[in-house]
Amino acid sequence: MNNVSNESNSEVPVWKAMTALKISGICAYITVFTVAVVNNLIVLTVIVTQKNMRNSTNLFIGNLAVADLTVAFLVQPFTLFHELLMEWPFGGFTCKLVAYLQGLAVSASVSTLAAVAVERYFAVVLSKGGNQLQGFWAAFVLFLLWTIPAVLNIPWILFFDTKTIQGPKITLTICRPQTNFYFRSYFIGVVLLAFYVLPLLFMCVCYALIGLKVWGRARGLKISSSAAARNIHRSKIRIVRMLCTVTVVFAISWLPVHIVTLYVTINKPLTLDENRLIREGVRPIVRFVSSVNTAVNPFIYCYFSKQFRRGFSKIIGRRFVCSDRGSNDI
Image (cartoon, rainbow, N blue to C red; front, side, top):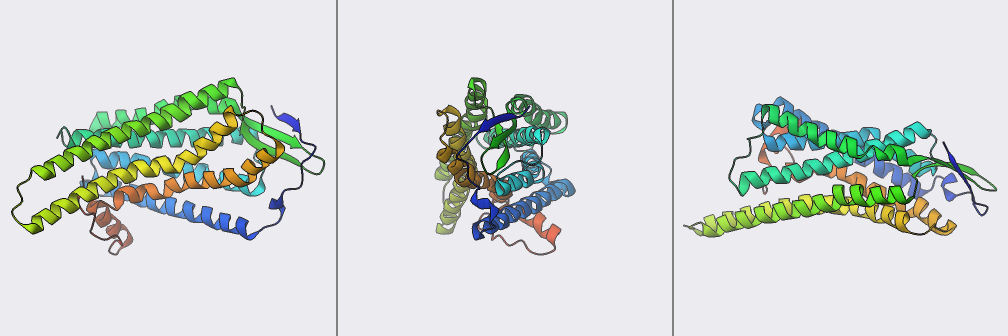
């Protein structure tokens, strides 16, 4: 059921004219979409077609690629049209479905990143090896990584709906959640805490312990030559850089979206000017920033992995462009 509200001071928004900023936004979204699809499809192809890539770490990376492809194919096109038109022409069912799919894919992606942190912790800190998750247990973990988010994101279907805004000159239909007590509780408790703050803190702890372990091992080695010392130092830097990149990119990509959503959710009813500023200025930017994460996630892992670079080389028929500075895997 659509909710109707009157905004007597509504004006015809500037999106009617295809400005240079709009064209730039379209090009940016198309670029992100293309890079995300190509990169993640190549990652999946490398993992599936090459036996030496079938280990537990790459299993999670492949699952992350599937989550990113879900966002790229099923969410980003609708988001682009929504931001360009400043309204939602796809109906209430699609509004609910897209909101649910985005929540599901993002939650599955976050859960996968946390699973990678656990797997790397066992492999590096506890020295349990990186290829222990196979067969039934691998399928079971992947099942949980999608089933739990699928259940916890059902409220998106209940809270999201279309809303018609009637003004003196135009009538707009938008897709937005209900900003009531129940949505505020759900967003803060599940979306913000369970699928952002807590996983981020968890990954920070895991990667900090991994970094300390690797650093301690490197310091404990008996160095026989200056060349060996330089190699060990470079190895430490590569590992710490990768672990920091994984955590920081995730945090930066989704922090603006969560800040804006939290502001709108817990704040008193916004004025017309505030609502328009967020709808036409702030929201498109923060949504684009979050969408970039689907394109850069493969680079976070592939740049530091010689095996992935070799796999990329076989797929595209030439030497992968990344240098060998990050050739050592964790």
